[in-house]
Amino acid sequence: MDWPKKLIMIVDLFLVALSYFIGVWIRMDLSFMILTYYNAFYSNLWLILIIYFVIFKIFKIDKTIMTTASVSEAISVLLAALTGAMVTFVSLYLFNFEPVPRSIFLIQIFVLILLLEFVRFSYRIYSMLQLKMQSYSSEDARTLIYGAGAAGVMILKEITTNKVFKNRIIGFVDDDASKVGKTINGIKILGTTDDLIGIVNSQQIELIYVAMPSVTLSEQKKIIQKCYETRCKVMVLTSTQDMISARGFKRSLREIDIEDLLGRESIRLDNSIIREHVTGKVILVSGAAGSIGSELCRQIIQHAPKILLMVDINENGLYDLQQEFNMRKQEGSISKDIIYIPIITSVRDVNALERVFDMYHPEIVIHAAAHKHVPLMEEVPIEAIKNNIFGSYNLIQTAEKFKVERFLSISTDKAVNPTNVMGATKGFVEKIIRSKEKSSTKFVAVRFGNVLGSNGSIIPLFKKQIENGGPLTLTDRNVIRYFMTIPEAVSLVLQAMTYGKGGEIFVLDMGEPVKILDLAENMIRLAGFIPHQDIQIKEIGLRPGEKLYEEIHLEEENVSQTENKLIFVAHPIPVSVDQVKSELAQLSDVISNPNIKDDDVIQLLTKVVENYTPNRGGNEDVSLY
Image (cartoon, rainbow, N blue to C red; front, side, top):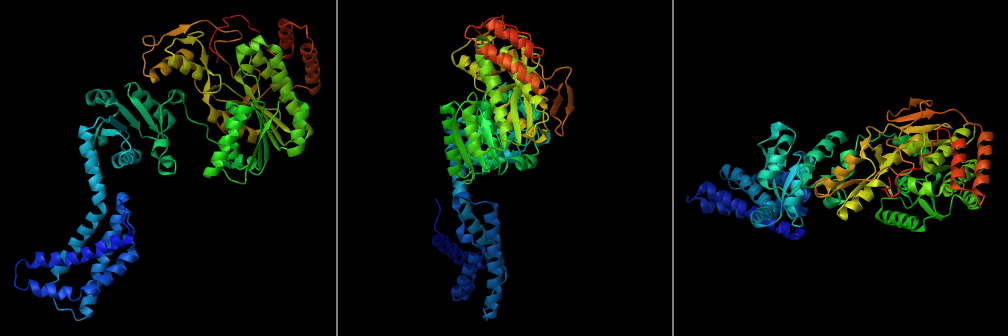
């Protein structure tokens, strides 16, 4: 219901005339002078209306949108009415206006302001009253807003003015005890965090909106933990910036996930340095269709590279990523000047890699392509060596041949004192990187732990098992792992790239390790069930190659802190190029032998990979993480 500007102006001028009528009537009541004063004003009505027309145009109050009228419109109307009244008063007396009691002008100003404001806010008042009436009889979700600050008020305003949302706001909860008992737009602040469970039970709350986007991650984690213990549906406001941007209210809310309960303070990055290294550069990402590779591409493209080369053998994943970027370019969130090229090829094919490098001459290479599943690689160690070791070596040698500025390889904590083939192959790639310390290309590696939600990781598996009613398969109740989110891991990679001088292994301070049993129990609770009661957790034994805990660096590695307090750099013992070549030749001879046995392959790996102690026993029918 938005009126056209001409209609708004006609109504406003009518209210001007009406305000003088009311002003005279209130001041004179039934006095015999009332007709005289009416005549005095209305004989000069043409002048009064012209003055107000000009003033209203200057203040643009005819452009008000009735459905969204706010304080700024109210102030504009107030100033326009006061200015119009003063200009009219002076003008009438300059035109030899017949004297009338000045109190009529004061009454008229007050009446006009009330009339103009009422017209502009009548629709919003009507809508709020209508929603208020509906909330008493509807079956909308009984809703609590956690956070009585600016974000909470924004949620309240959106819900109470938009009929799309089927919520009945019961009250607020806030961690500031001084706010308890007060009201915001008629909605009471019912209590603090300590009162949350009691409020949920007494008020029969079904949904909680967490509107605390500005608090630290550790504080938000505690709040979310408390909210989800109530077993209500919980929605988290990610950012007030998202809410007021084109994303809108709905897209700025999300359900709580396991990341909220395992999260910690994110790495603080120096984006100016990252932009300096990325903007305007030709960058190649291998494994671009994977979990880490695709997020690398998403973050890199935000820093405006000249060309982004997305290399992967997975055509479906690469196609999906290309379409994602196409849509974002249409939306305007990616510059139309950025070129991104999907390239279907394998790092095992050195000739194909050389064609790509010869055509595009990448300046930065980030290597994320790898076989990473521990139990699968235990079954086919030769394939792990072909892809992880020789595929990486192909890309490293090609980058050096074409004089790439920087090369960064993604490694894993499983490369430290490895007990499985995957970790051993990644450890050998680190050795190749170490041997390139004197190369003109700056070769570095980044080592980190498990990534939440990555393809084939434990969290997607647990989600599927919960959907099927359980049980959740747990290898050992004492297993602990380090976790980080995909964006956090990728941010580390980009930051480490700027620190690298050649031959370093970067390591992240990954915070406190997480027991997989706790992870399983939390995920069951998040789904609205009770662990060990609604859904069982079954312990089925360690898988081949698995350790109870992972390590981040070797004892003999000289570890020092970088400019970022959460990023460390390990300085392992240097390795000669000749040693690496000799060991690669041995590996090549073994995997090229059609009659070679897996045990012989493992035996050779123990010789060429320091601290590799194979553990090929265990239960093979276990979850993959």
